[in-house]
Image (cartoon, rainbow, N blue to C red; front, side, top):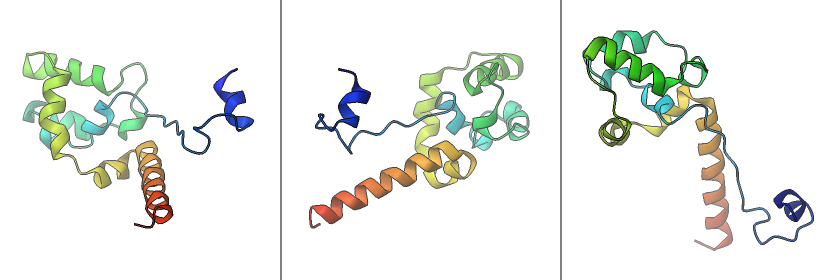
Length: 122
């Protein structure tokens, strides 16, 4: 039995609890909302880009960062290092202003949390 049939027929314990969210590109889409957190050599280029979830699909944000680092900073862009250094500095509300898919996900997650708190009497 497929998940779709299982959910439709109410045979799964996940009914009403499973959510599927779509993130456009990789998490770098969220990182590039803050050009000021990157090396000064690439800030201006990042600031001129389209909104992060609309950046060219042939050159998604991760690839864009790799290219910009090699061209302007003369070193490789390392996802794990950038993520560790930049993610803690991101404000989810500010990122969501530029990323509509993330915004929709955050709204739904807040609603789920609120509903759970109301049903558990908290």
